[in-house]
Length: 250
Image (cartoon, rainbow, N blue to C red; front, top):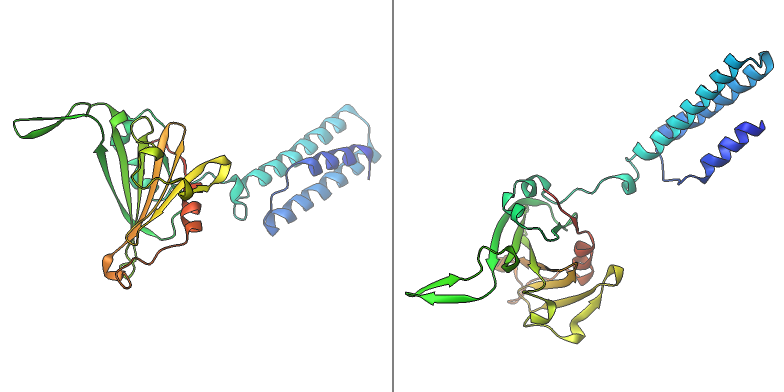
């Protein structure tokens, strides 16, 4: 094998090597063989400038083909695939999110297929009562509004709901939660600490990130409970949901 070809091959070996489909591997190998044959033929027949330009173009095409296949061959390699959110089409239609300038995240994984989502907001802040009516003093301030999104399962025989709540940490932090206890804190990825709570009717995993308090609230239809209690999912599954969260932009 000639020196120039060996140098190119060594550069290719130094690139990341995600798994490729067998068809892509074959195409790369065939292209490399053709590249080497062209080089040897041109070397033996002529050293003219035109031939050397032809060789350079051939090499560029082969390397370009390799890089395109390396990045685009996503059938067996999720690393290069952009994440897709659970119920992404419905989330994209939530115009209510436009007023929030804080971090917004949603899961890219849930342990069930989603049939629909429901969105609402919850106020938390100073209130006043005038003429027997409650008035929210800062209802126009998004910092006092929680984003509440309910993901509803498709399976009618096993109705499940995952609610995702997102609060401005300045108005609602982990320490503000009624069920906060030091011994209920758990370790999550990237050094985050989560707060876990379960009472037989719901399971809640909460954590703080970049000025936002996130809650994952899992529940099922009471008709499916056993001995008056919900059949819980493993804590590891809640953590898996939490760790699937990605930044969302409409």
